[in-house]
Length: 299
Image 1 (cartoon, rainbow, N blue to C red):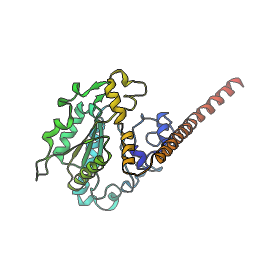
Image 2: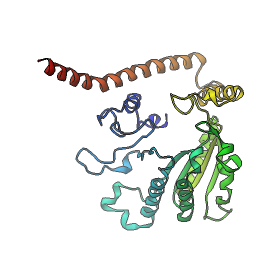
Image 3: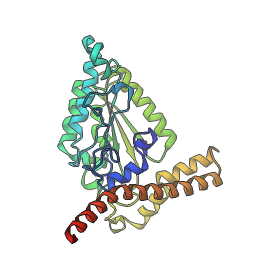
Image 4: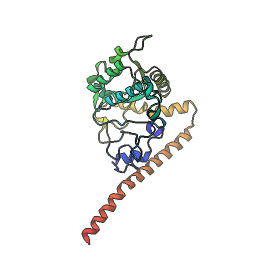
């Protein structure tokens, strides 16, 4: 939803990735090579030349091995620091890559994947190098069906990382934040503060986003009803981010109940329409090739 909100992904492109459509125009993130949720920007134009990266939003796609995105995230953050510290990189042909090192490398990871070695190596290296990396940990309390009790010391990654918190008045270290994933105003406040510190001071930060939920379990072929209690599932229904956002919108009188229902009905209709269009675009060339072969065989 974030990629959609910033205009970097359409609903049709989302389904094109689900269907593994190999047409780069239909599925620009990876031309069908990646699973859903791996959102990548195309940094080169049709001639193989670099685009002006300072005039676009840039996303480096996650990869399937858990925590595999971490070393690359560190490199992107370090690049921003290098551009800020080297005046020779702030002119000429380099201007299309960085705005004087004013960039932040935003990274995301699930709480279970923080047990991976690459996570710890990268977290430590970012603290040593003091680079503008803003790390978000999405914490829904589970790694597939395994609870935090069996994966994370103290059942909290932010508690474990307390020693990385920088001392007052000193730059060396991290800024660490905790926020509830269903609390939209608190999320705005937290990320605004964290991003400002990271961008201006070029130090790393970690935002531990707790109390997230799994709408469908780990995957569409799984069932979290098998490993979650009735009470937990009831809590997840109540504190689902969409439901809590809806409550907040009504409370703040941003929209009425009727307006929200209209939006929800339109959204469902639009998504089904785009899903059908994505499938048609994917399957049509295949059917055409199939018909061509059958015609030749029967000729």
